[in-house]
Amino acid sequence: MEIIVALKKTVDETYSVIIDNIPSLSFDSKVAIVTNETVAHLHLQTVLAKVKAPEICQVILPDGEEYKNMQTIDVILTALFEARFDRSSTLIALGGGVIGDMTGFAAALYERGIDFIQIPTTLLSAVDASVGGKTGINNKYGKNLIGSFNQPKGVYIDVDFLNTLPKREFAAGMAEAIKISVMFDKNYFDFLQTADLKNKDVIKEVIAKSVALKARVVSQDEKERGIRAVLNYGHTFAHVIENETNYIGYLHGEAVSIGIVMANRLAVKLGLLSEIEESEIKKVLEQYGLPVKYTIQNTQAFYDKFFLDKKTERGEIKFILPNGIGNFKIVSNIDEDIVKQTLEEFTKK
View 1 (spheres, rainbow, N blue to C red):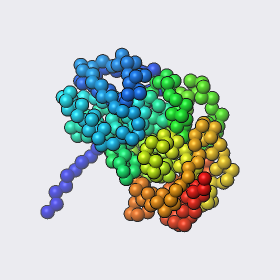
View 2: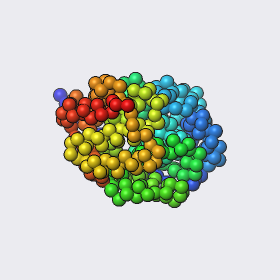
View 3: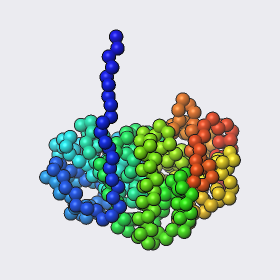
View 4: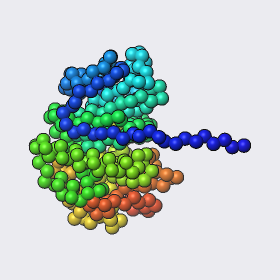
């Protein structure tokens, strides 16, 4: 006997990304602003002045990637239960990628799902993490291995928030902009080679170009069954680096920068990228103050961690590699020796 449970998606999850000053935001139910100690000190009052709701709660978390775990998710959920939130309530993620990922994940879990919006305060979150609905946390096995796809109801990007970013944090965001340009748009990559990021309008353009490219990809492949995996260029290597350094040695964008360099080295070995193109990409990363070197201590251990990557299927590692600048190729079944030879080049100090 077979009974069919017919489920058809009828919900339109389209949302807007607004790149402008934060508008007034009105809600007819409870709201919780989830942020961290650093951002709360800098920007919480600004956002509170823009939000109108019957009740506004504040969930202020410690700052750092090392807190992106299930214990912190429980802190958020406990705050919501104690404030008697219900399914009509809304979460606001005020912060960078870590806050955005955890808030979105908590929103997906609380009473099986409530709304959330993103207000990114870092360049990395503005150009990448706040858009697309990837949410989750890290554990001892790797980065973002526990999570869900949960789209926000809106994203509000105010570039004035970026004025308080340390140089290192700002640079980390550029790694994601460079990543998407190399994968999809040679003209955008050329633009980044000479972009004057002291100019507010130029920063807005960088954010807009990055978000537009990502939106195009996500609209085709929301749950990373195909082309969206390309947005992980550099990340397969980066996630191992972050795991090896316990998420405190490098900012995410810094690890991605190094991961891009490693991926490019593999692409050169496979004949997908010329050494001139490899040098151009490395030069742009260095131009924005991003690290391009990492010393691998144990090649086999580094290689083995690839199998925990979310793109690995049936024991087969998939690498996202540039096929020239502005194009990509998803490559699997690469000879293990070639991959290890590439890693060996990063064992030398």
